[in-house]
Image (cartoon, rainbow, N blue to C red):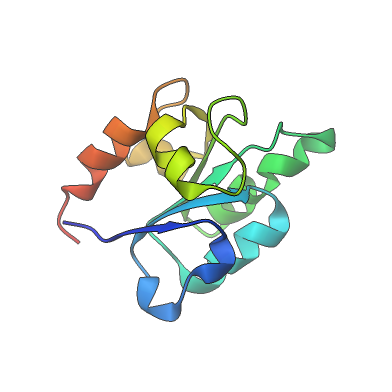
Amino acid sequence: MLAIRVIDSITELQPADAGCIALSGSHGGLSSARYALAVRPLLSVFNDAGVGLDAAGIAGLELLQLHELAACAVSHTSARIGQAASTLTHGVVSHANAAAQALGISPQEPLQPQINKLSRRQP
């Protein structure tokens, strides 16, 4: 099974978390994506934070895609921003980059069953 890190802030990732599924409560902006990029989880999960002006709340998904890293965001109306447990238990995927979709992450679907299925893969 793949390791799952449930962290309220993506800044809590450590180098040993490389290859994990990182479930955070962080927004999916560029600053958050840079933390994920440094560690390189298999999948980074964020909150879309309402998407925002110029899609700033999900801009990190594209940055991670440029580095062939999977990332998705759950809707801010489905999960509390800053609370990873809420992301996991209540989150509905609102956006997913191509790498996340290749792992089986589908927008408009609840996150938890998708994570359960992904986590059963061999590292």
